[in-house]
Image (cartoon, one colour):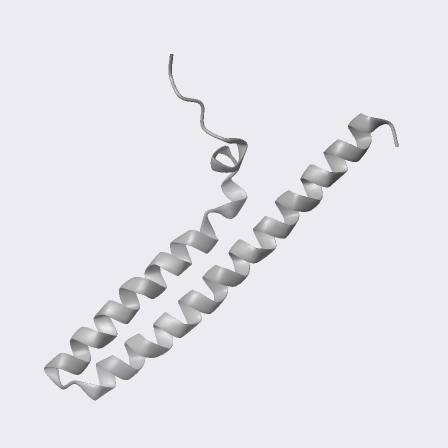
Length: 82
């Protein structure tokens, strides 16, 4: 028996959020590496990129969670006959 992916994994609306959040984590690592090598310009650019990626990635994940939650409540209300 093969495992079945949840409905959230099949939905492609939620892909940009986790991808941006992962890019933000990678940018943090790059910023720390640049600081270690003494390049303040690159570390500043990487820090800015990490802040932007994390902010928008987490924001998109929150919006997607709210959309999925509203969709779930809408489905349960329509199924109960309200």
